[in-house]
Length: 286
Image (tube, rainbow, N blue to C red; front, side, top):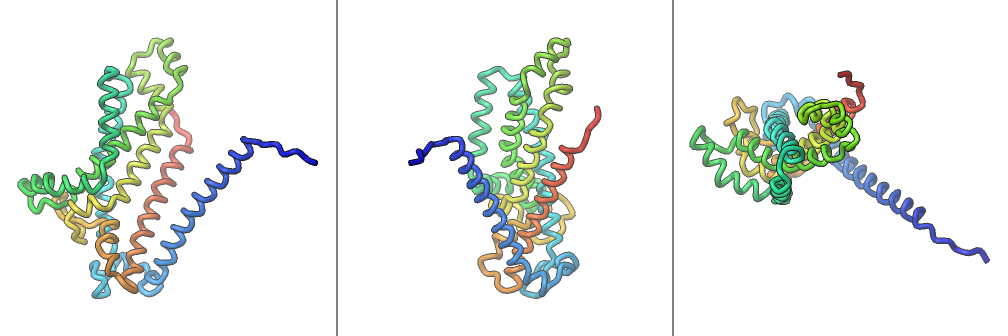
């Protein structure tokens, strides 16, 4: 009678394959669902009308998504411009310059900030930030308010991931730089940061993806006007806010057009991921 032998490694290997396959299937199903729900609008309305209609008024047969796409891009870029350098240099300070006690306290503070729900950020922005901007330049609910709130929300993601990437640089590299007589800043600039480049780009990618997908906070502070902003003080509407506002009552082509908004977001994230992946694989010369 053949004996049964338990192989933990084989079981773990199989379990990992199953989990990876399920995650991939879930992603495929979500993408396929969004595409299938978008097809009626793409067939009945046409892609060109999403770019060239006069405005976004689905009840009147107008489906221009360009103001919301541009609003999404502007608020995301603005948040990254603010949070990116702040998160990078704060992580650099915490990892390389701060005393251990300050570094530990800062890390706990950033982790706490990362755990705050987005609706709390939005509520704070609505009752504090928007009135402050309104005193400076009405109406207050604007692109600028959204940029500030999003920057605050993605700062923990950026800082924690950058700090983790810097901490994973092999100590042999740092010891070698010290043996060559390189100073702290020279070691950071020529050894540590180039070695952590892939992780730094990943941190930027995840922070940007979160900014693109944020809904509740920007819905509460941006004014939700589907228009092309002429200044940072103008109200805007993002793609995510548009879907959240109108999905409850949308029917027929209007509902399908909202899924086209979701498809546009997926394409934006895909383009971003492809660009970062291409940059990381491309050769770079000092």
